[in-house]
Image (cartoon, rainbow, N blue to C red; front, top):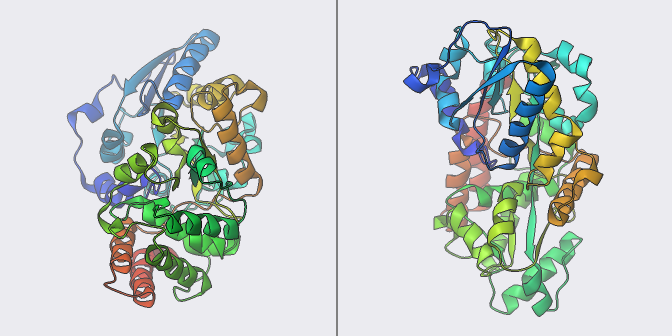
Length: 433
């Protein structure tokens, strides 16, 4: 699901798009050629987002310190994804661009030689020392494009993770405390359900239901389970304890009224709104909702890691990558380094983003500081475990479909896991062979 990251849902189409879609007119704009005093930069973050604000300041610092000019072209996510292989193979390639992490995206570009091996720059600037091991996984690729390899092809500037949002006002009214263990979490769900409240805001038509399913599997797994599932180190047992527990427990959540009976038709936006309007007091989802809840939720709330587990969904954010045909690679490395400075990272952190190298003392917004503290706790445990659809292109749609079949009663847990396993094995065969 690629969000099962905010971009993951698109991943299934990315491989076909990168390989087959013709170059659109907007994809080849720019001067091309070489000007040693110009850094050509592409990214797709909105100007008022945490990253957009931080990178605008980084541009100012870069121009002040180097005397070079940044030629920034705002691209949409779709523009960059659809035209990447065509543009990057020409002189129209930028010097630096934001690109989505993962096997089917940055991994594909790395395996085809379209982006630069930046091992030397990582060593020169010390970026590896700034990034937790699980953040490094999505920046390093093997020759076949599988993440977790030995060669650096990108640098993440921010992170993301999935946790649990709690409506603290509703909890107070019900006389309940935010749970710190999984048993306490289930007791809270029972208490709300007994009062006729559906506690979990969920969506089975899009990514949220798959997030909680994978989180349940992670609660019975370990880092080796993640490596087997995501990096193909060993076969995955789809009738084993992790998958069986996750699918059985998800069905129990529906049966016990923790999740709405019509969850299969609910979309992510609807689930988020049901938390914002107070209908459901708990939402298991990603840090990308944080800024919206700050602006729209009219109650006190918090985001915590999922209780009772040492693993959490999440990853680095998208990557800075340097095209192999870039004209000014050294300028690109200088710019990346500026974006990793504490003062630039603080802008990300104070605007609802998750910086990867911020000084905690620089984060002055109280809620943002709490968010970053939770994220840092996840990093300290090396808990980031990526997203359930990442192993294979198109697996997002399979997960959605099979979990819909489960919660509507069309199929049981064993059949659901068998179908998921069959699709997984087919989709990952080329990486595992």
